[in-house]
Length: 391
Ligand SMILES: CCCCCC/C=C/C(=O)SCCNC(=O)CCNC(=O)[C@H](O)C(C)(C)COP(=O)(O)OP(=O)(O)OC[C@H]1O[C@@H](n2cnc3c(N)ncnc32)[C@H](O)[C@@H]1OP(=O)(O)O
Image (cartoon, rainbow, N blue to C red; front, side, top):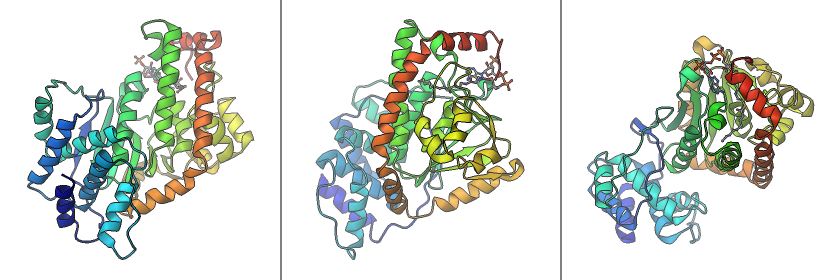
């Protein structure tokens, strides 16, 4: 099987990868699908041979890398010489998958092949006997176009507040984006808000009592933030409007943050009887100095986009009237830069911080778990829900 894939890639990949455009594909994410079986994987390998349309060199390299990872595990061969262009590109694609588990690589391979041939997914599911209906998630919309995977909060009637399901959808979206053929990944919001933070009804509507909900929430939050800490490609936020709570704190883990001049940045944790998350207790003082971080994280000072830019949390601010046009033109140009180079540079920048970020995340989550059970927090949430308080 390896030889077949190797031949296919070699035939498809006669020169160094150029920058290829990928066709527009909209992927609605829902609950994680059943794990791909060995049979699904083998079916997908055979399906690749039958593809009528050349999917482009980027995709073929990704297929090669995932195949090798799924069958041989992490890259274990030495890097080809600098003039061995094709093999070097293949080696780099495989090596970039790091320690991705074999099962995950197998699943990603099957998903990637499914996305190339729309009818194949249904037939794969039929063959494995899994009659799993993939539930579409209307609240997180993931699209891929022009080398950019866009993950959009899509719950405008609730100002894009994040439900437990949306946290899970985002974890899955980031997992898929880390191995898809896009060069960069972008978060943005639908409607007038970027995101109003954690949905304050998450805990009150959870079955099984507050204690169980707090326990589960802390585990989910930790995994959610970890997927941002470990995300391997450039991660960009396009902040189209006000941002609150966790949607602000996460920005410290992004590689670039572009904002409309209508955006505001608000972390009202003390008002809610809570404490900072998403590593902001570490990233914010580092980005803006401890005095300014204290004003935001302890006193809940809301920043305008220009203030946030002056503090280093935002990369650049645009007039709202031209924001979308200007920013997408720019991002499309960035997405044409060599993806491996960007990924490797990000790895260098993030490498020395990772251990620290994971430790901070763990501590923030266990602190929050306690906070969610505190009287201060419960009263603040009840007050919001009974509309006595608005931020
Ligand atoms: C796994 C768990 C991880 C948890 C991590 C910890 C995260 C912490 C945080 O994110 S803390 C921040 C939480 N967010 C807030 O406190 C914001 C609360 N919302 C507001 O203060 C306001 O709604 C507003 C300022 C965002 C917008 O005000 P306004 O323009 O006047 O609109 P409405 O208030 O009428 O809102 C419209 C509609 O949306 C509902 N809504 C808005 N935000 C949230 C929210 N965060 N949670 C739940 N619901 C929200 C609001 O109730 C209205 O609903 P309705 O039309 O009344 O049904």
